Length: 79
Image (tube, rainbow, N blue to C red; front, side, top):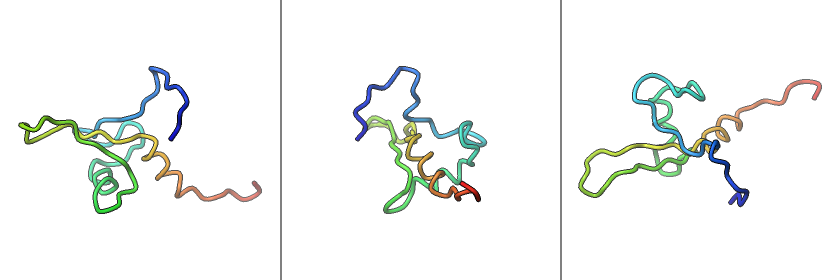
């Protein structure tokens, strides 16, 4: 776990987009749901809701999403 202090301008969690694509990664809402679902999802997420609510606010852990995307990066020739 990273113990460095977090500045107030650091984005840690992002809200699942209501419509369209993620403004940071450009991934569609359906792709984001694929990445956070299942038994051992590659991207972390949480739902904020009270016990008496049927729906909540889905938040995605931004660093885990960026790490997942970076895992597909291919080394470039000559480096």
